[in-house]
Length: 215
Image 1 (spheres, rainbow, N blue to C red):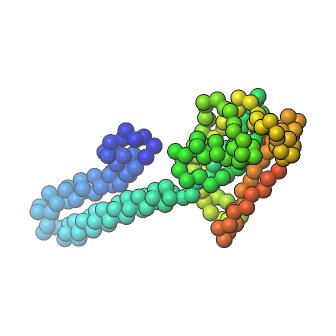
Image 2: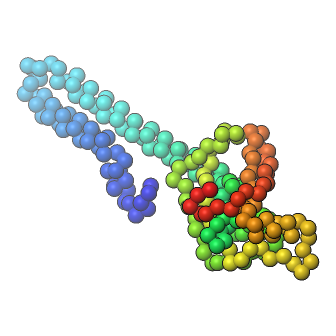
Image 3: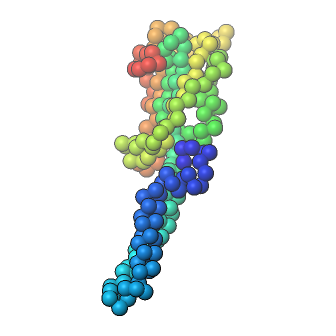
């Protein structure tokens, strides 16, 4: 339900308006036929069969409605249980300088903490200084992985950095190369690869940094 403030009756009217209309029409038809059956019994032998048919149709309608509700509940449960992934981007001076696409996500409430951990790993274990703002894009519908053939919820988030990762007084060769690439307008990109057998590998590469509005 999109609107959590909806009452049960509002939900019924929204989701099952057609069923309610059919039920009302069948009930009215049955009532009219029933009230006329005494007068028409001797002249219209079809009255009893019509009443029986209306009763049968109404019973079928009730069964169909219960099945429809059960199906919707099951479908909602299946959607909720789908795996979740997070694409986290790190913005500095208007451009994306680090990014990890579709990392595994346990729970949407962990996006902030998990995003910070992924960022530290991208920056070779160094601490990141960022503004206390987190832009999160919630998914409207599941996506499907073309390789693993699995559906998942794809969350996206952007963290804005105050400065680029800071090296220690005695930086390693990897840290110096990393910092040089960032200062030269590059973006560190991680792309997890999900195999059909459940295995995961990470592709790591440098690309040109790009504005947040597009690659």
